[in-house]
Length: 296
Image 1 (cartoon, rainbow, N blue to C red):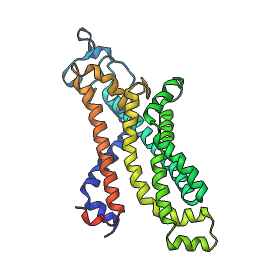
Image 2 (cartoon, rainbow, N blue to C red; image 1 turned 45 degrees about the horizontal axis):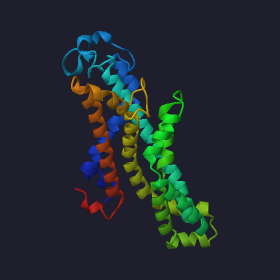
Image 3 (cartoon, helix red, strand yellow; image 1 turned 90 degrees about the vertical axis):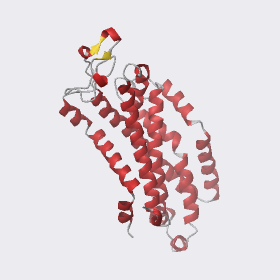
Image 4 (cartoon, one colour; image 1 turned 180 degrees about the vertical axis):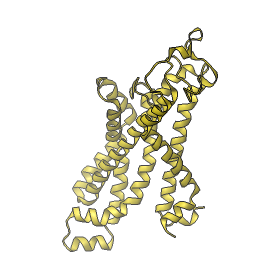
């Protein structure tokens, strides 16, 4: 059975892929969607807030109306749909960028350790162990707290998360490379005079596709959680730039007065994380022929 057929039969993978695709489309088309709604994420609407209640939106469900599809933000009156859509752009953008950088750094380091000989493996192996042993969240908070506030926070977040988180990819790549280079076809390529770059590109990389791709699919939702956590703690994305974590941080003080302000970004974050986990688990089953028979 082909991998496409296995994917079509895997209901968990298809459900996760559909939800993840929808979230990516919303993030990519955020400016267009908010323009169609006639709103933007930064305009204040003080007339839609009840000043007598401390700035709670007027109306049911956080001020839902024909003009504001998901209501408005308490305290500011900014359109919640616009902020959620643009927040998806930031949250997903940071997670995807950090994941791509992590995979590239980890893949190159793992390949160099696995193919570089005893000394290269020893040195790079210790570097990988060091990266994995560092308390990355604490170090990320420290680094982000001392960076000047005028630096572009989404780019900075992606870079910090990637630099502190590539060790897992490198360890997987190194282990798989050490295993693959003992295969007969790799030995034949080396005997024929092929250099390490050619061996890595032609013989090793195809065998790394499945484990690295599956691991990257699991790392992406983890990076979303890290971005949300850093923004929640106030060292990540800062107002007026929206992100789901930053919105949750400000929403905690409004939970009793306006539960929708907490439930919407929190629910979207949970749904997106669940979708990418389903995709990762589906990829593991699809790319591993030993597990294809268990897909229902």
